[in-house]
Amino acid sequence: IRSMASKTQVGFVGLGNMGSPMAKNLLKHGYPVIATDVFPESCKELQELGAQILDSPAEVADKADRIITMLPSSPNVIEVYTGPNGILKKVKKGSLLIDSSTIDPAVSKEMALAAEKMGAVFMDAPVSGGVGAASSGKLTFMVGGVEEEFTAAKELLSCMGANVVYCGQVGTGQAAKICNNMLLAIGMIGTAETMNLGIRLGLDPKLLTKILNMSSGRCWSSDTYNPVPGVMEGVPSANNYQGGFGTTLMAKDLGLAQNTATNTKTPILLGSLAHQIFRMMCARGYAGKDFSSVFQFLREEEGQ
Image 1 (cartoon, rainbow, N blue to C red):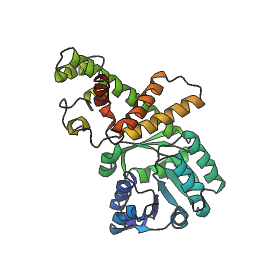
Image 2: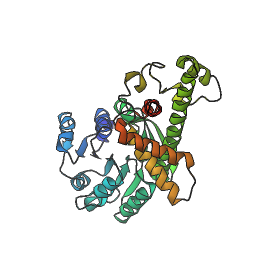
Image 3: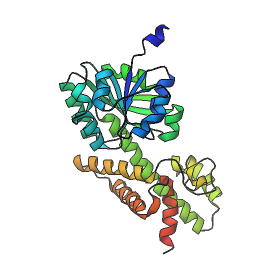
Image 4: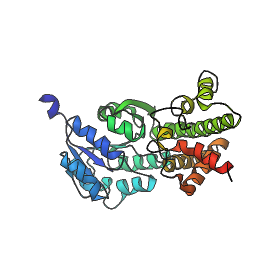
């Protein structure tokens, strides 16, 4: 009973594809959840599971001194924290604000400053693992912020994730996530081009995959998430590229990589090219498919 008593209310803003299963895991771990979303229909399921639903982020901040936000992009985060009905309008002194959205690290730093002025603590904690890991509570959280607050953040994040990694000051969680996804995108395009060339040269795709995976070209896209249909089971390529990590989301993350590279005067030649390839895919009907569909996109391009 004592452990339950210590579980005070947790606020949750943003009940989309990721936020909803994350909030459910907090409920499963015995935390009372107070939530809100711009789309009321997103709140119904969570309400049925026992969460209290309020009308705005400000109202959530009035009731809870630990809040997690999970939103699509930088403008949404700015609005939810600093808007007229935003968290910072009603935030209590000493509150812990954890943002799990993937956004520009510069915006995370801005939010942290704004929160600090109100006597609250802001941390960025973007995730990797996607919807499946969100449901099973196996996300990886990359956390940026004041190190003294990390233990408090970890207590909550551990209910929703298998790995919670401290990355450094505010913005470094975003930086780690953006860098990983840039490499993932480049690796996937390379794997897709390689597989396509090998198939054209008469190699069996399963055999080629086996050779790559025992050789120096091996990468996550070749050995765990192969983009060629029929090579692996249980991956999006085996299911017409449904589910997984959408091309739109990859294009968004590469856009962030591009912005941060421009701001820091960092050359990302392949990162920029990957960004353009995934943007083009979005315009060509691949937006809703998993990003490994770049293999199918390459096959289509050559047929013209």
